[in-house]
Image (cartoon, rainbow, N blue to C red; front, top):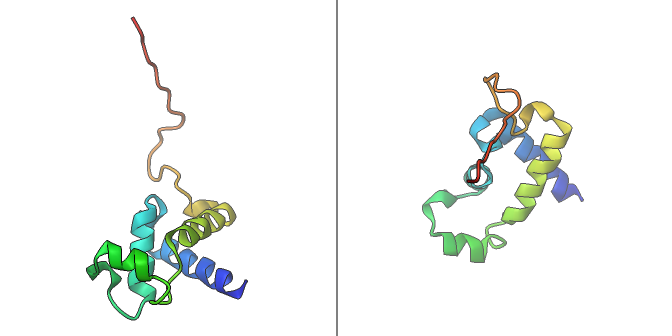
Length: 97
């Protein structure tokens, strides 16, 4: 349980400092791994990261994604909302002939 709280707090910090990670889980994961790993994980092949994340002491992708969901539910200002636009509701019209 403590590890989960740690992941959540780290994700919260990243979402506050890097707004682009609010909209893209892969950006969030890359930022998390680069920030909290003892090496630049972004320079490693994806296959190595996927197969050895536990050896690097990193949480799996899904753990980070779930932490983002929890954090964004507690802090709506960090959610994936449309920022800086007044688009309101989006209406899609599909015409079939």
